[in-house]
Structure formats: structure tokens, C-alpha cells
Length: 316
Image (cartoon, rainbow, N blue to C red; front, top):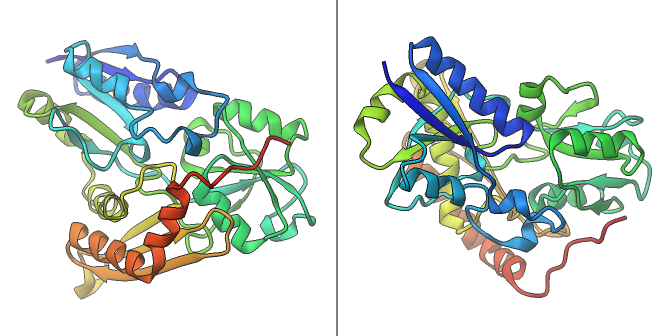
């Protein structure tokens, strides 16, 4: 049996994910050690993620530990991993996916429609902001950073009327008490890879790859590969207003096919482009939907977002 060292961020959710993988590896008879690594994204807590603009902000330092042979594998939320990995690395496994959808959390209100005019909503995601503003232009969107407990505490203390979080993180931590609505993907398209864990190793480390093979879920691999192909085609990271949600179709002659919903939106919600298509090849499908979105005006929207003129709302 092997001795395996896992690199992980130190947030509550990241540690849950790392311990989850550790338990599965220990059940196989391996010895597992955990090294907590602080990333750029963990150090910058007073600026909205979209304004930092650093690809790999939650992964760079962990990858450095892989290169330096301080750890053997890294456990990431797949949506944090850049779509183009450096040649030094590979994704050895993508685990069975949790619910990839976003959820509406509130103390007082049952869903987005029930919010009063000018309600204060917390999210630092341009993707969520754009879709919220498209639904309800009156809503006041305010930045929300911090770990899950911090965000929920701010909601309970009355700083916000509601906040939007990922279902997966709340489900994993067992903190679903304030979830009022699981938002359908056709209403709020999730981030590419949301709900899946990506296990990263050094490229060519065949021994570790073989030990992790049992963690790789075929459906999660296919759907997230499709979503990440779309994101890569659009040139985006996890902080831009791009959504991608792929589902495997497992019925009859359609077995093996994937349905992909893609989204590009302006952060103010005035321009929202959605495209749905089905296909058999995850990468080709993702690229085709991405290309279609660009042709329909997604290129103009993204140029505006990347430009200097865009500013996030101020703190309430």
C-alpha cells in the first residue's frame, strides 16, 4: 500500500473535500497525510474575485507543492481549476458529482420572486449577478466573500435579504437550513465543473494515477469535460459571467449523448445569451456551443467585461 500526501486549501469546505478523498484512499489501505496550503485567493479577502482577475488563484501554490514533490495529489473544486493545465499536471480523477446547481438562501423569503423591490442580495459571482439582474433588474447586488459559515452568518445577521451559494458546498457541509430554493439550471446556469472534485497530480505519475483510478466517475468526467471545453473556447476563468451545465442522457438509443446548456451574460443582466445543444463528443460539443455563443455576440459581451470600464457594486 502507498503513502500519499494530499495538498489542499484550508477553508472548511476544502478540508471537507480533502478528508473525503483521504477516507476513500484509507479505505483502500493507503496511508494518507494532509498538507494545508494557503493560496492567492485565500490571501485576498477584501476584493471581489472578478476584480482580481488571476486564473488559478485557488490552485497556483498547491501546484507549486506538486512540482516540488511536497505533495502527491491535490484535491480541488473542479470549477477552480483553469481549463488549460500547465504541462506539468494532469487531472487523474473527477469524482461523482454533487448537485451542480445554485441555491437561494434566505431567512425571510421563499424564492427569488418573493423578494421585495430593491432587496439586497449577496454574491461575488458575475455569473450569478448577471442572471439575477436579468430576472429582477431591481435587485441590489453586493459583494460577498468568505467561507460558507461567514457568508451564512452575514445573511442571518441581516446584512443581506438573500445570498446565492452552490448547492454542493452546503450539502457536503450539512448546512442547508437556510436553503429556500434550488434554482433550476435553465434559470441560473451553474459554473463549469460546479459540484465536482478534480484530483490533480504530476503529469506522467503513472503510479499515483493508477491508485486514484477508482475515484474517476465516467459521467462526471464526460459532463465536466464538455463544460470546461465551452469555458476554454470562450477564454474564461471561474470569475467571468459564463455558465455551462451538461447532463448525460442515459435513455435508449440516446445512451452516451450529452445535452449542454451554455450561457454568456453581461453582468448588468441586459444581455443574456443561452445556447442548448446535444452531442456525443464532450469536447466537440463544448467547443461548438462556445463558438455559437461567440458568434451570437458573446465576444462583445466578454470584451466589455474584460475591459477597464466595468466595476462591481460597492459594499452595502
